[in-house]
Image (cartoon, rainbow, N blue to C red; front, top):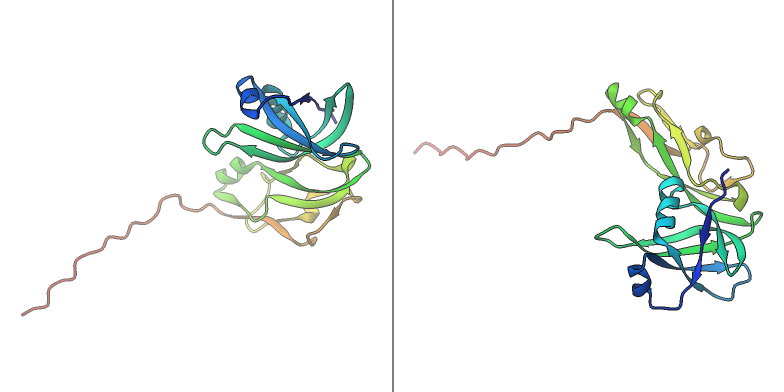
Length: 197
């Protein structure tokens, strides 16, 4: 798997001033750091990581001529613009056990629609406990060949046996159903007819 690197810069100014200069304020926790370390990341570098690897990416952080391994723990976005305004990283060792929510990405929905079918998603992430090095940024699953009534369960994802999942094996994450009609039937209310006098 490709290793991802992000350069962290010590934060010395107010967060707003750094945002105007093309940086996103953030913090990282864990390892030998006492409390939260206040840093900044280049906005363009963060966007690239999010676009390619998603918001749950594992990454190396370069800081003060050292590199630390970790994962994105929390992302805050502006509710209007959608821009990243703050980011939290958790620093861990590769063999450290962590609990993560891994997002599920379903592919092939267009093929279902051509057969008048659609995917109904019940759960879009899996709670997983295991060594950081085994964790996935996301679980990708192809539904293009699925048939009406098929259920996608934990067994379909073929996760590493060393990863522990809190859900039961028969937990249904999604199901293939008939394509719903996109337009709603309109109900026209009529005036009640007058009673004959």
